[in-house]
Length: 142
Image (cartoon, rainbow, N blue to C red; front, side, top):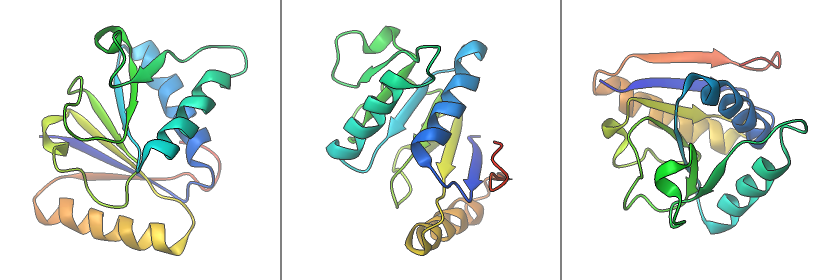
């Protein structure tokens, strides 16, 4: 069954994504980052090019020719996820294919609309019997 982790009180989603990716890569984990749209995907991709300042987080778009070898894939389409390891959902609704992944990460910001959408997703997963792990990152740590 898919492991679901909610990270609450995320003040900066791009920075939180960089922190999670930096933790995942040494563990040989792969991330599929599902952005709400093309503009957001571009923003997250841009941030991964510059962070962390002393390292590099290899990433590409789902349409790139090296998608099979790249540990972090960013896209806004749910059509063909390139792997089934960890899905990072940045959309307001739950992804339709989340259960095919080993893990699902939900990042929840401080905005009330984002929090309300996250509560609905939380209930959706809980009502289907998924065990949910919650992490309050308001102190600055994941």
